[in-house]
Image (tube, rainbow, N blue to C red; front, side, top):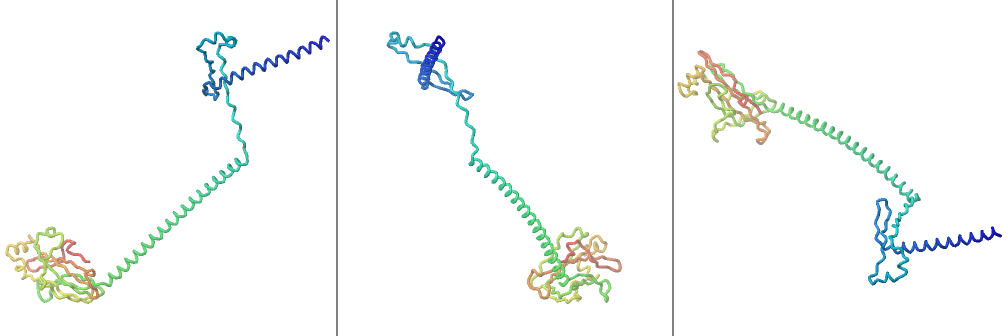
Length: 309
């Protein structure tokens, strides 16, 4: 019986202790509700700290006469720190799996597309290089064909060449001859000449200068067949005084102090050609050499005085 009574009393004490704990928990919850309106701030570790709210102190002195206020503790309540719960782990559902698979497929397709684009660019580059080489070969072939056509045309065109020949019947007499060495007839349109007395070739003008021919003094056109020639100038030793004009100049020429130059220009074209674009020119120059008994006339002068076009 004593044991049974002790057991009953222990159960009653357990019920009383449970009731006391529930009352204490209700007071703590009420204090927390009153502190919810208090200001709070976020700690560096992610927890929230709330500052307890102090009860208002009445100004009419009712706190001294209120017995409930005497029983309430005046000390500050402890701070309550509420840590946020850890975020739940992300579920790996069928939507996430589908998104991951689509991302992998897009990455693979992008890589394949980039490789195909690079391959296409390389192919285009090779085609451009081969096209450039083919174009260059075609241009070289065209230039070679044009050069060959020009060479053939030049070989078939007339060529006027100027030479100096002595007179067989007259001593110390010379003639300047223009002959057609080409393969087609030539029509001489104009022929001009000039006499110049200078110390040597270096004293001549860089470009041949001719006096303007009057309209009525132009020679008649001459047609030369291939191999034919015509005289354009004649010089005799006896005509030297007339050419030099003064005895002083004649003596200088006879003493080789100065030199007598004869130069000219012949303009001609093909017999069937029309227009100035088909015009050709031949420049010539001769030098007179005086001797005691015999003289000579030879081709001489700078390159600008002996050129063909």
